[in-house]
Figure 1 (tube, rainbow, N blue to C red):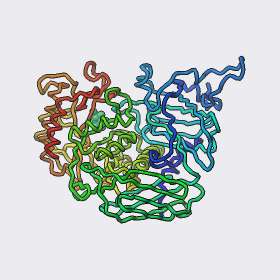
Figure 2: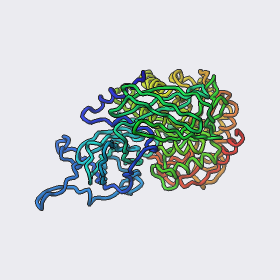
Figure 3: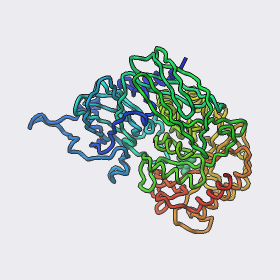
Figure 4: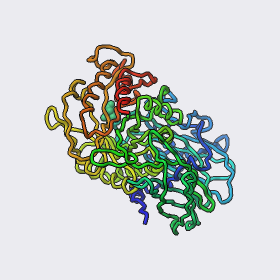
Length: 596
Ligand code: GCU
């Protein structure tokens, strides 16, 4: 019996007055969609004038009504259609100078024409909105979503009108102490409708969600389930993978669900051969097409095995920041550039930090043959004892896994980064680990943990969270936040766990073009020297199974204020924000090419 994970009930704790998003529709790339991308009218509303009245009560006549004066005496104090425009997808900070540091509410409005069709249901699907989104259609509230990096959708079948309609989204990216992430992050708090917005047309009864992957430890057994949505729930569903000679018909139960196994000889997906199969899921009135890769990933002791073969993860961390133009990355081209640079570096793996990246990153990694560490922004010191905070984190994990569970490159679900050791924290994160295992039995679970010295020369890996993880990520900055680069030469590493360790972060900063001797901080020579000493140390650590240095490209951070060097950029990139390769890039590239 398939378990509906407890996410639903916990969420009602958060906000009871708003409808929650509809369960997520799988693989909208394989559906009939109508894009709402492009120009959206906006109203910048720092005082939430369009949402609350002067008594701070919610205003039932707020900006979401998109009101127009009925006559010359009618006092309406806003007008979307005479207001400014922002591009969607896109953050607002990099689109307008005055919004560069803006944190607060911006109202977005998009009008669209629609012709209603018989036996057709309609959804609106947001790739992501940072941070809180309240969505309205034709002046009526649809619901709310919290979390800036995962998709959500609402059904609008009975709310859309024939002809002109308008969608209004109240977007608020204010940082919150009880947020996920919380108040402080070392990345820019880009606000807005940062990813694609689509209308999705589906039949009355359609395949809302499905899972088709190789069973853990297996090269031949596909485990799968299908979830229909609609009135005709119990029916035959046909799964076809022509190239693998698979043509299977299964029957869903009265809840529209069926789970099954298929045996087949498959060419397994790997970085060397990112083989994808055309997959078709057809029910009586609905057909969904997908391209799926089949691979298995497992650990044995301190080793990681991909398709039964031991693998060292030659990785790099990436923030979802657009190369060259800065701002949030969102497009296929952004993904191809960033992942192309990772490939050039010699990578077979990337850590997408510290939140789920856009689906183009995952789909491009799938085609380019790059393994992925996918993470939710349980970052630094969030409120561990707050049930609503857990519900929020749990929902972001739910949406992340739901969106990408059929994507071969994703091998690791990370439940967080650099969270301080405490019993409430470990309890909180263990629940997320259990949730991830329950939702997906085929992948590995990890988190980026912090290390500590047991004496001046010996570092011990013994974070209590490690007990529940398959792979431990360890962030270490020996030679940057911890002494000078040469210190790494004499460090001894010990681990409490008979599990694979991945250095999920290591790095030092350099301003591109700044040249000096190797001990002059911020020079390219200092950073290159830092990597030389790191590599010396890494070569000696038997249980190390991978690494993702911090970071591919300089990225914006409000915490980095050193004039002439940082200027609101974290400078630990191997590439500058303009795509220039620093000396350290070649040091790591040489090492990775040796490992190939
Ligand atoms: C931390 C953190 C990153 C941060 C990096 C740094 O470990 O996880 O988000 O940017 O270190 O200090 O550069």
